[in-house]
Amino acid sequence: MANELRFDGRVAIVTGAGQGLGRSHALLLASRGAKVVVNDLGGSSTGGGKSSEAADKVVAEIKAAGGEAVANYDSVEEGAKIVQAALDHFKRVDIVINNAGILRDTSFHKMSEQDWELIYRVHLLGAFRVTHAAWPHMREAGYGRVLFTSSAAGIYGNFGQANYSMAKLGLVGFARTLAAEGSKKNILVNVIAPIAGSRLTETILPKEVTEALKPEYVSPLVAVLAHESCQENGGLFEVGGGFMAKLRWQRTEGVSFKLGRNVTPDLVQGSWQRITDFEKATYPEDVTSAMQPVMDNLGSKSRGGNELIDVDAAL
Ligand code: NAI
Image (cartoon, rainbow, N blue to C red; front, side):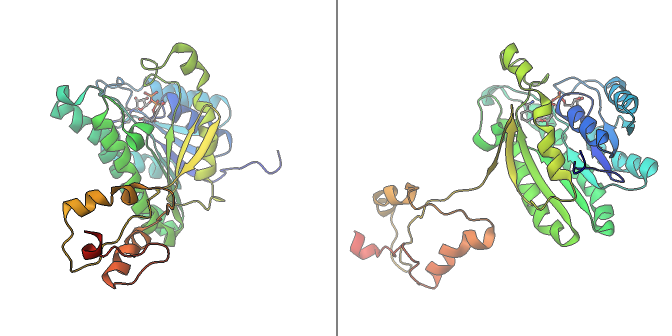
């Protein structure tokens, strides 16, 4: 195809690319000209052990298809080494796809601090360390595309995944701040919340479903967000099984109590319907727009459509 999205000359790091989603992202980017650092620690799905096999296999696949790739076996907790591998082999780093992940699922009352800590270290600290090491090179080059891998479990919460939910939604806040900081240097940062059949989901979902939810349904969105033509920044996308959609925060119109009066719990309870009514929802996009009704209230200005509640009158 004449107008297919190409990545010639671009260097991509894909963490956890030895299988599952990361492997699929790496194969797709390499097939379209990117030089790929295929990072994978090669451990178990709960974070034990290590092996070079997974990463080597994917590099061999990429090379057999005529692409360029190098394997790296460091944990994302040693992110600087992964970035150094990109610089040593390919002299630059344009794309970072933070994908590596493990699970330590258990209900909260049985969760150990080790379960919490390990999930934090791989998903959040690992993504921090890889991205933090790549960031100065991207700033210097005036170019970068960074992706984080969140999860529906983080966005919505999910039984038995308190640790994982913490890390996965943490990545969203982390990414949105990087999106704000990176854009001046043409570094765009986005987040996907994928669903795919892999060793992480094979024990949870029925076999027919994991087989149908191919990682290859997720990677095309990753490629678009990693491409130089991408304009999207700070976005969060749900993707899997052929479905792709963007998410945003929604907030009720809310209430503003007149300041300087006694706002009691009883008054708050009496206003509950209005506090929680999404009929006239707004969609704040940043801290400034989120703060607007507070600032309006401080200035005692009435906002359009949301008259101030006079405490005395309401009681
Ligand atoms: P997977 O288990 O097939 O692949 C993850 C890879 O990451 C493995 O090859 C593993 O060796 C590697 N890895 C683990 N810890 C590492 C570390 N410290 N350093 C380097 N590599 C490491 O899992 P899958 O499903 O492909 O998951 C990829 C990402 O997508 C993960 O972040 C996961 O949390 C996320 N995700 C997956 C969903 C799914 O439906 N499969 C749903 C939501 C999120």
